[in-house]
Image (cartoon, rainbow, N blue to C red; front, side, top):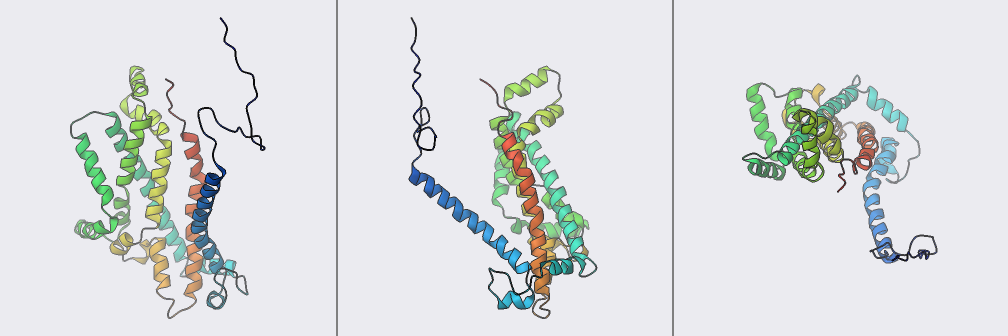
Length: 305
């Protein structure tokens, strides 16, 4: 008995795309247009402020208030403004920039590692109180950072850590959201059979976590790292409470200090807009460099049934 196999060509639309996928329905043109329109509006919403910053950073103070805000001024002063930003106050902006890199880079890396370790442990190990710990972490996600800034300041003042790098770094090392995300992702992607196979091969728990768990959890780790970098880089209230030494300021606090002087010294408008433009560049670079790990890690760790 033989089974006849159909050799009829698959129906396609005028563009050569199959009219329908097996077991699925063809996407309606109206749906495609609607989704594309929504994505375009969202893209404009996020890109317009960046465009305005670029335009504003290229203007003198007179052009900033005397010309159209969404178009370039009479003179292109972008490079002069950026040079003024980097040289003002013996290069204090470079010091602020380095402080922000320190806070965001070190804080983001350690917070991501701790979140991955905690999330992996809650997902792959069975022990008493596991659900209670997870519930406490969920409660931490609901607490805004501004609510803990003042208690942290009082605690660090008693420990002698206020107005130091540690006063901003230590609170940045904990990410309840990252802990929550890593726990959910590890539970869904790190297959127990892979962990057991590694144990049978003689691998220790730390080696399994570092060589197997972290690799499979790459998309979640990149997400946590980016969220943590952006959060620390844009953090304003915590450094404002903790720091009084201008040399320890991050970019956010330094730019606000410049902006507060624009009323009596209008040239600070040029410094502020130029500094804002420079402060956006590291976040854009981090997004462009790390986004490939989302694509590359989505299929890692898949287990064939």
